[in-house]
Length: 296
Image 1 (cartoon, one colour):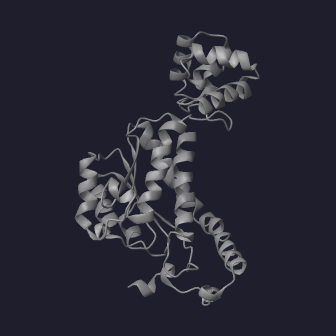
Image 2 (tube, rainbow, N blue to C red; image 1 turned 135 degrees about the horizontal axis):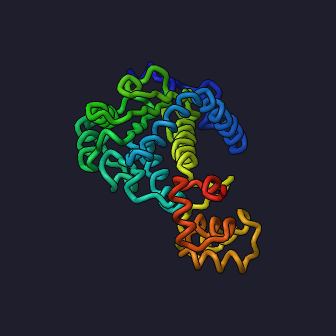
């Protein structure tokens, strides 16, 4: 079956990869990498539908769950763990599941991806509901762990999205929405941590970031909901408040302290000349969107 997958084909321009000079190798690798965003572009309509489903799930108290094996699972986890500090989400609002459990993030767990039942088991362990969205990630599009997860998620009525790097992927048949980014042969045959992995990373970035924008987690292009958990982020928070309100550094520092280090609240306080509690009420009434909360 592997011979039918474009990600398993040999790339003609790298048949002599083992004897290429360093710069020649890097040039061809870079050339191939440059094709990935164009491949992703072809799937933007399906990605847009997915974003809207994820945003609707968040609005309804649902979650976004990525699941995959190996590189695919690690990429989902990477995207998930960045959501709380970037968008101040609850720890369980965006989750990443990897075949073999959390230890598989650092060290490969051989054979874990081949177990269909483990995909369903992992979703049961996080108490999947019909309000949630499950994104199954598999470069080949045929990973049993992911197929098991999508099958179980569908049986509960959860929204299912398949992200693969081959056309007519097996996991696509199990999903409500199929995102098939056909990246083609890798410079190193079958090494889907390369172009396929890059494509998966780009799509995951799009899914989470765009969905968070639709949830009012940004103002303009500013990360107004980020968590200020260290000195660098505290300084970034001050700059965000300054950019959003054109206030001074000292004013940003003062209002951030009054807002308990919540840039979004500090911005509304400054722009509408209200106290912290009133700013929170305005934001709540506007579902967290700053633009709507500052309209008289």
